[in-house]
Length: 316
Ligand code: XMP
Image 1 (cartoon, rainbow, N blue to C red):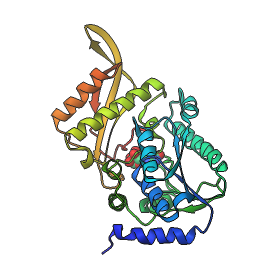
Image 2 (image 1 turned 180 degrees about the horizontal axis):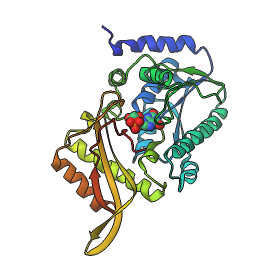
Image 3 (image 1 turned 135 degrees about the vertical axis):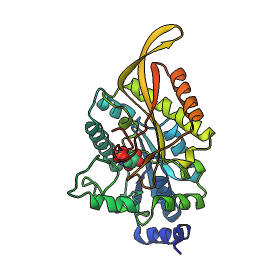
């Protein structure tokens, strides 16, 4: 039987054999794939690993701080790059989904290139590519792409670094098992997939800082309440989105027109198909009342009850 945890020694030996000299740069995001990649590299190469965390300002609450702290506590050298203003300025007012994705992808490439140029003796780039990513990036060639996912696919052409993908033979659940066996905290081991362009793809219509804050705060409430009900780990993804539609509400005893927040919770095996999760009404009730009372300018909360297909998981 193939036991993923037992492959750790072999992966570490392979990295050692391949990387004779020079620095390996690894982009990290707090997700399970990039975290495990960084830890395996660190086991093989120690201080010859440089992790780079680019903060695009589109993460969930507290995510960048936690990710950086965790890697540093393991002894990994992490370069935290605060690029929030650069991304958010470019996104300001942009409505089109693919345009938002393009802006985040291009800006990420620009910032990453600058950072790598400043790391002396950088020779390799490591990525947390998984087996399904390898398959998918081959399969989509020439096919109709539904969305331009930004962190799948091969080495970007603007790089002169050699690519290392220690997890390219593994599925997500296997990576979670490896993460667990490496002693990583459950928060990382069971972390939901999170899109490369972050919360930008959960804002429908013009991108504004107000909508970003609404989505960030509402997502935190969704996660907290599902966690409290023991459901967070059981679902594939759970988040909030916001668009342009308004609903008239009453705040205090005054008329208030506010945003509509839509909560999306799905169950899935591989994200290719997904079912909307039949979350108990009392949990949904708690989520809805907290979002509408705790977040200013939100007057209605809805629950997304369309599966994939015909919908996709993310709104954009
Ligand atoms: P959709 O919305 O297409 O999403 O049903 C399928 C899965 O992919 C995630 N997703 C992304 N992942 N980069 C990623 O690595 C991206 O740009 C991206 N966009 C969506 C989404 O969260 C879901 O799990």
